[in-house]
Length: 316
Image 1 (cartoon, one colour):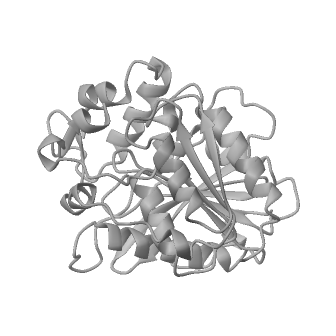
Image 2 (spheres, one colour; image 1 turned 135 degrees about the vertical axis):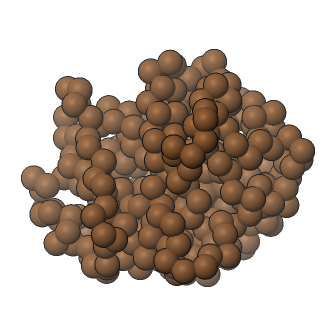
């Protein structure tokens, strides 16, 4: 992939079981911007797995009636992608528009936990099931619905879920529509390889935080020297044969987001995808395929949050 891609307390609002003694992820200690929100990490059940679910919420305001679930891509898990610290957080941008904001670690990523029983392994169908499990938990306490924001591989999973289930709104950030050669995809990514993948436009501070979070959270931590992030085999297979997104079934408010320099998801592809949907808008922002980590990423996050707020957050 390197070569190819070169409120009250949350516990009162969430149902569902918890694994034994999950380790919470502390929020950053740096001076935060206004309304940094509070952070809570729990785990939810998806089939035979525990999946880490990060929530950022404003405990000083009335509990939010709507929520946004962020779904990560094929390389880095949810928190290093969307919630590195209060000043560099897509979750915080959504929270500032009145939502409770969540990020999920899909099967095989981050702090998702080993299977409770034999698992079929991470794959795109499994990712769609993980999204369904998270939406069910979140929707139980958010009567005005759950919006989805998917990036890269997570955008494909979000679109497949939304084509068959009601969601408040949908945002697809750089979905993967073209196949990637499996021979160009590295299964195990060390810190230097991840830094190379993020590219020169991503600042050192952002890169160090993201890579450090990803490697600390990986299931294989302590079992590899040097530590490496593993891309599951089922995910690699999905990258080689991405699905045709069911555009005609995406009838909810839809925003298609691309970095203006994104070679994997070009402007023509973005406009064709939006044109095949009932209610879609294309948003071009500065950056390339690594948008969540680039300098233009927070601009994209804020514009996405404003789009979601303008939809009215009702179920469609």
